[in-house]
Image 1: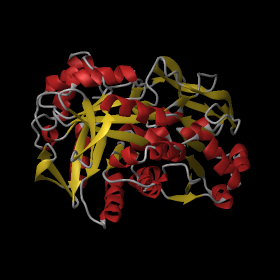
Image 2 (image 1 turned 180 degrees about the vertical axis):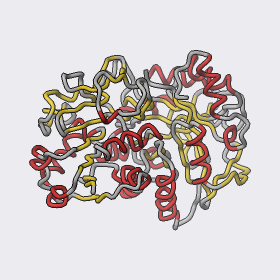
Image 3 (image 1 turned 120 degrees about the horizontal axis):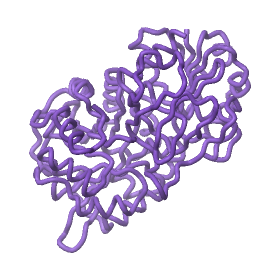
Image 4 (image 1 turned 90 degrees about the horizontal axis):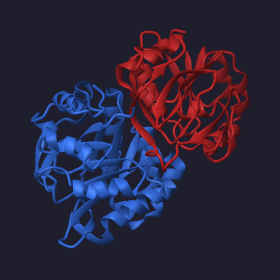
Length: 194
Length: 251
């Protein structure tokens, strides 16, 4: 069973629909105990970082998400919340990855970064098994995580940024696999099969 | 590199897709869920659904339609038409829509843009702006193009962007349904005036119109309806043409 975390700031319906299509059992939850008994966790996210972090604190999920040892996949804002800090609302995040979420420079590019962009896979990962380098995924983000030693793929929007990131049991994708057609479903399937 | 997007638009009335010219003379163009699935397979980058139903039951039926669409397709979609409250936006996003487009309601209450952007993120809020040239200037129209407002097209676009809209869906009422091409003159000024993505709408009649909007006006996405509904221009054919002309598209 996969726990899909519902903290009032994520588009859980789309993730749920994708998991249903993959015939994967899941539970939409904000309950700490249910998250603890799940085999895997999906941590979706759209919206604003400081609001989302506040929700995690209010639901008493902040600590459990910092210490879990099972595979957890952060999507979009879910991935950014795995950073040390986000400049979106200047908020301290989960501190899994030693980076800060930055805003794209509006004087150089359109913000939000919205639409289909290609990824350049720079580190082998099971998450991208069967995914061709240069595959395109759907993004919708105004903030990004810069490249760091844990970056597994990069995309470019005037500057390079982390399209995906990975450390131990923590996985993050900046794009929306649940909205990225067959390639996106493949990534969710890879996560299920970890 | 970020791709330019091709977005079929589906006008929904009483649960069916309809198409008219200049917002009138509506004819039936099919089932929304079936068409959505068809476009998704054909290579559409996103879909836009605009509900033009005018009834009290509207909200409930729209949420259930969004539910059905979200179950069927794995690409992003926007839903709009008569949305005026944060509760409605929340219900539609929860049902699986990625974005909502707001039109008349934000003209009457511009604060709705900032409130919605704060709660759901700018990426979920599309300002849909209908403009018409009156011989002297571009004016903003609301209520499906039926009512003129005192707002200037460009000023309102800038204000919507400043308030936190994540995108502007700009429809030229002069061009809508004419197949004479997008209003690149206005769009070019607009893309230079704001830093959020711009979706061009109204006037697409052939492949070249899309290329012109991307090349001349530098828009981020092009929206069209009848061209796709009646299969006059298959999306793949359009994308191959754009790709050959050095426009980055997802094929």
